[in-house]
Image (cartoon, rainbow, N blue to C red; front, side, top):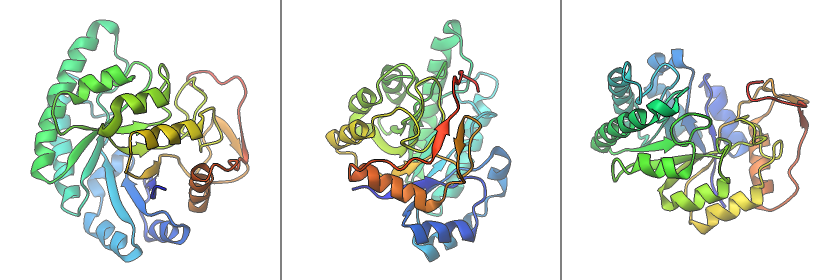
Length: 278
């Protein structure tokens, strides 16, 4: 139904590319820890992708330290992101996922942060276009900008080329299916994971509360044609008990169970009485 993709995590090795190929994962999003962006070996990543037949689908621009909505760091962020776009687009990556803000954002400053984010998204969209690429704005939870479809529509109104990365586990105030329908064809890529509706969890689908047949149906309604790309780590997060680490095969099996409307295999149990920040 959809090609299956997976976020890379920080250790982009030949073994990882081989595991993708062996399991049937066809696409990779480059997403590494903040300290590793400056040491990425783009030529080697490109060589390995070609060797193992893995599509370099997207590139997650760094966050936490970098915030295009912040008065104190917006200029630095735009400059740094532009340099990363230049380097990664040179090896054929044409979708760049960006967080429209950091947090916390108070109600009093929200209007200014939204305006600044929109202005800088437009700048980056213009730059990405010169590289044959597009910016995909990611929806975010809690007090971040882009916490619902109305805010996402406002953000991407800043430039006609802006598109959306839909993170399924970031919707805390809106039904994810309603979000999909509202953004429609602007959604060009995904971050697939499950959660408990309390906070983002980045669990494997089936471990949380999302109705995956409803989500899949909403994607069909808008004729989504991108990759079903997981943003879930191999290791067990502190919010859940798992019998073992995840493998690339687990992601492929999970996707096929969803696509074929089969019961989802679950070998984990969320911790009880989880709060927002546990």
